[in-house]
Length: 318
Ligand code: BDR
Ligand code: CA
Image 1 (cartoon, rainbow, N blue to C red):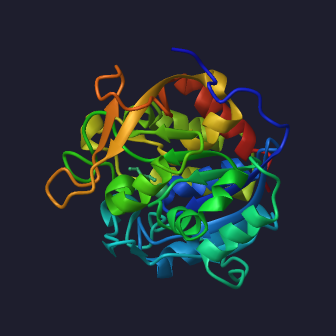
Image 2 (image 1 turned 60 degrees about the vertical axis):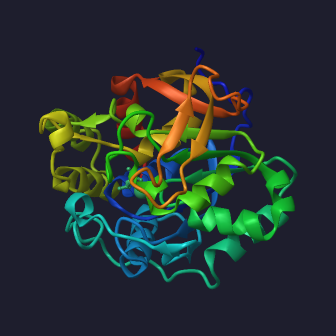
């Protein structure tokens, strides 16, 4: 195992962030916006944690609160082969746990897949990092409709999947289950791919003490909203009600501070059948499948370092 398998990285990498806000998505978006290592060119939105009619205004409000001028574009309101199912038990009916943010600027015109392709077309080969923290529908649509554009992608980092048990079904993690066919397209797109799974994010447990530390890190409105959103997520039975995993910011942190993680190369196959295993990510850590170990799997996280990074970064936002 070694840390930082992605190798040498440019100082400020062009990025597209695809999201379905979503409580933890909000913190991931702010973390990306606050980080000079990432040149965030575009935020694209799908339904997922709530319907698109909620996730889109949420994304606009989250970006708007940061004061950063990044276009937000609406995308898929359904999966490639079906419907999205919201997760109000975790994110509330509004997607942000009932925390009301000031309305953000309007969405940029167009639809997500077109906007993603436009950014890729204008970019140098191998230069754009795709970060996906929702169902993979928008990213998959963009690449499936113009496959040559995969050549413009530096790497793909997704919060998706699970090595062990799922969180929406016994077998599947929510983002993977929401659109398994889309995830399979990304796993097969031929570019370096990192899967930040539930087994990793289980190590980033939000506790009352960590919320208090975040709140104490500064006086800005984004930090205050982030603490309020975290406090609104119900604690998880999976963790004996001690806290709740902060999934999506882990995917962004992987790009910012790979030294906080250890990782290994694995083979991954996404189950796309219609049975109880739908959306399961079969992760082969030991080469038993004979498939190429082409996916990077972060396996351990320095949780204290991660929450310190999150607080430091969010504290620079207004
Ligand atoms: C993932 O599903 C959503 O509920 C979260 O925002 C995260 O992206 C975790 O399974
Ligand atoms: Ca999400």
